[in-house]
Length: 86
Image (cartoon, rainbow, N blue to C red):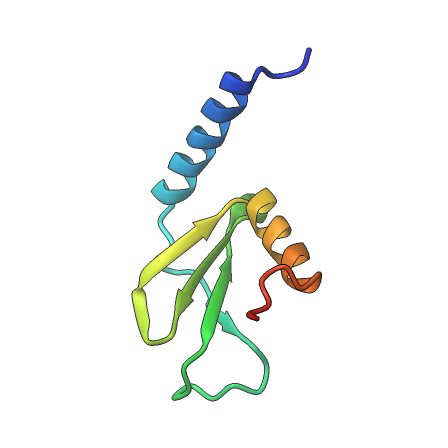
């Protein structure tokens, strides 16, 4: 049986709550190859279940977290040029 719109919304909210409840203090942060540690860069950390955390090297205390589905949608959109600045 397919989920109703309300059930989908509730599941996504629950997944987000669980994702932000994770202790990520010991995760390994990665940045693009070839960037130096003193350069401004975006860093990502892989989390359980395919989720990803992302932060700026200039503001490492502010961390955004994405479910696997959100991250996949972002990566595919970026590859397709959906976020290219005009």
